[in-house]
Length: 311
Ligand SMILES: *[C@@H]1O[C@H](CO)[C@@H](O)[C@H](O)[C@H]1NC(C)=O
Ligand SMILES: *[C@@H]1O[C@H](CO)[C@@H](O)[C@H](O)[C@H]1NC(C)=O
Ligand SMILES: *[C@@H]1O[C@H](CO)[C@@H](O)[C@H](O)[C@H]1NC(C)=O
Ligand SMILES: *[C@@H]1O[C@H](CO)[C@@H](O)[C@H](O)[C@H]1NC(C)=O
Ligand SMILES: *[C@@H]1O[C@H](CO)[C@@H](O)[C@H](O)[C@H]1NC(C)=O
Ligand SMILES: *[C@@H]1O[C@H](CO)[C@@H](O)[C@H](O)[C@H]1NC(C)=O
Ligand SMILES: *[C@@H]1O[C@H](CO)[C@@H](O)[C@H](O)[C@H]1NC(C)=O
Ligand SMILES: *[C@@H]1O[C@H](CO)[C@@H](O)[C@H](O)[C@H]1NC(C)=O
Ligand SMILES: *[C@@H]1O[C@H](CO)[C@@H](O)[C@H](O)[C@H]1NC(C)=O
Ligand SMILES: *[C@@H]1O[C@H](CO)[C@@H](O)[C@H](O)[C@H]1NC(C)=O
Image (cartoon, rainbow, N blue to C red; front, side):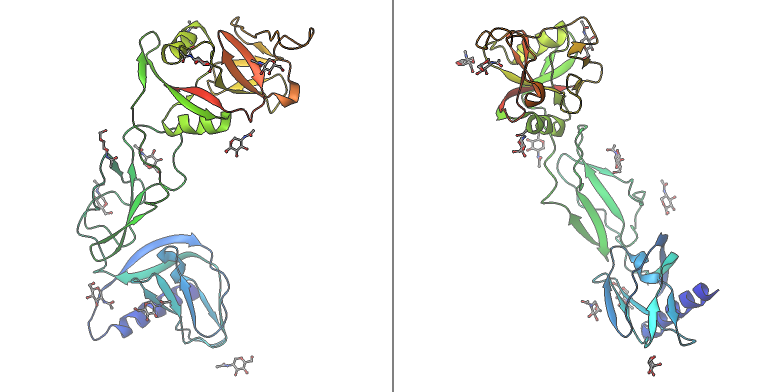
């Protein structure tokens, strides 16, 4: 009940302020949202989205004229409230100027498609604060933490978000189809350690390749034919010594033994007799290379060329 009164009060305040222009206000959003306790007097609160603005105003006085919402700078002005505090407001609502919509579509971005799964279905006009993301046409297995977005921030005003922190779309440049398994492979010179190499591959929508059977071995060799060059593979036993987890989940080694009969641990004749058979590095060598047809365990800090497998 109190909640409804407060909302009504807020609505009235807004309309009173705009009575000369007789602006229409629309309900924007409704959501459960927590609002931090604010002090008394006059506060400016920058909203992350408009729902923050509609918090319950809990007053020592019977009437609480709490908020003015400023869509232009996304702030709530908390005013005329001596001895008033704010409370959490699940189901808070806010009213905004109904003219604050985007009748124009978000600007296009080369090579990217608009993705409307962000609370707006794409039909115009777009309500204030509508968001749309720009996705890369090629599936990335490493989605950026902050996708490229456009947001309606005022009348026909689209703001582009995350432009400088979203990596460009992965290209297919340099990926070669290996007919036998229908997958695409690319050798990178690097040199990079396993985690760096893995990141490069997943941004491409690929994964760091590993020699897991004869087909994949041939595929890797189709792009990295130099058998005297070590390449880092997509596997590590850093979690449990001897249990090699591969980026290809169909392959695994327990106690340094593959779950299939495909096994190519190598022998390093430069090492003292008795220690020549790989794996021999224990906890100091939790990463895996391919050298010739053989696997060797190596320290994970080692930087080497590598091959990505797009699947
Ligand atoms: C936000 O915009 C309103 C109205 O334009 C202005 O009065 C207010 O000072 C602005 N607030 C901040 C914190 O910039
Ligand atoms: C606010 O509270 C203080 C102390 O509780 C009181 O002295 C003051 O009169 C109150 N102000 C208003 C406007 O109610
Ligand atoms: C509502 O938006 C229209 C168009 O942007 C503007 O002309 C008008 O002044 C706004 N009204 C208020 C109260 O902000
Ligand atoms: C779009 O794709 C084309 C063809 O792959 C490429 O030449 C161009 O640089 C791309 N543009 C952007 C902005 O990514
Ligand atoms: C669209 O965006 C949503 C939310 O980020 C995401 O889950 C979905 O995979 C995207 N759709 C496409 C086709 O990329
Ligand atoms: C999109 O949303 C608007 C408003 O919520 C609705 O009127 C319209 O029918 C929707 N369109 C589609 C294609 O779902
Ligand atoms: C090799 O492994 C891949 C999965 O990584 C699988 O698709 C392919 O059928 C396997 N080939 C052989 C000969 O086992
Ligand atoms: C093959 O790799 C080895 C070791 O990195 C290098 O010394 C050699 O020059 C490479 N051979 C060719 C043909 O690139
Ligand atoms: C073989 O052992 C030597 C001597 O410790 C080392 O320098 C070299 O990196 C090892 N080779 C491989 C493939 O692990
Ligand atoms: C791999 O490289 C990254 C980035 O330079 C670095 O943060 C990380 O510590 C390296 N990993 C190892 C095991 O050295």
